[in-house]
Length: 341
DNA sequence: GGTGCAATAT
DNA sequence: CATATTGCAC
Image (cartoon, rainbow, N blue to C red):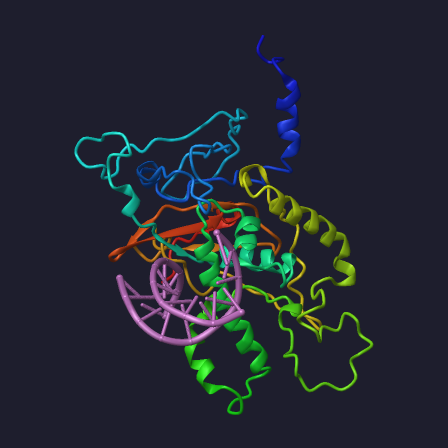
C-alpha cells in the first residue's frame, strides 16, 4: 500500500524527465564535499550552492561511474551529503569555527563540454546580454562564479577578435602584438563551434553594398545579431529561458537549463565537425588506472547537447587542485579504451 | 554593484 | 600554460 501513495507529483516527476538518457540531475556540488561544508558560506551572491540543494546530488563518485537510472530520489528533500573527511583539523568540529573563509576554490577546468555550454549560453543570449552574470546564470552550473565566466569571457573575446583578424591565415598587416598574446587559447576554443554571428566584422569593415541585408550582420552594436530566421522558434524558447533566468536570479536551482541547441554551430557553407576530446584529455580524468595508458574516449557526442553537467572530483594536479566538470552524457558514451599503445 | 580590459599573479 | 586576481575606467 505504498505504491499508490501520491502518484500525482511523483508521476509528474517522471514525466518531466525527457529520458534518463538525455537528462541527468544537474546540481552537483562543485566544490569538494568537504570544502562545501567547510565553506558553507552564507550564500554568496555568486555562490548558488548552499544547503538548498534541490537536486539529489547523487553519489559523488570520484571515479567515472555510470549514472545509471536507479530511481533518482524523487523526494526533493534535502539530500546533502556530509563530508566524511577532509582536513577539518583534528576535531572534526562543525564548520564555522575554522577559518574556512580563507580557503580557495580549486581552479576551474574549462573542458570542451563546459566551454560548449558557455558558447551556447552566449550565443543564445545574444552578444548584448552576454555578460558574465547572465551567462553564469544561464549556464546554471553550480559553483561557477561570475569571475570564472568573466575571465573566460575575456579570453574568448580575444579569441574571436583574432579570428576576425585572420580570415584565413593572413599575416602581417594588423596587430601582430595581439596574436602572440592569446595564441594559447586556441586549443580550448577550437573545440567549440563559433556561431557565425559572433564574428561580427569590425564596424569599419570595408564592405560593398550590404545595406539590404538586415540580417547581414554589419552592425554589431545596435542590431540583434543573433536572430536568424530559422532560429526564431528556438529563440522564443531561449528568450523565455533567458527571461526566466533573469527573473529569478535568486533561485537558479529550480531552473532547468535548456539543451536543445545544437545547430547554431553550422557555418554557412558547410559545417565543420569537431571532435572534442580526440586531442586531449582534460586534466583530472586522464589515466584512470595510470597503467598502460588507458584513456577516456568519447565515441559519439552526437553533436547535440548531451545533457547536464556532472561534476568530476577535484584532482590534485601537482600542487593545485583543479575542478573538472564534465557532462553526464559523456559518461554514457564514454568508452574506456583498453590500451593505446 | 557590474562590466570590460590590461596587467599581473599563481 | 591556464586561470585567477587585481586595478582602473566607464
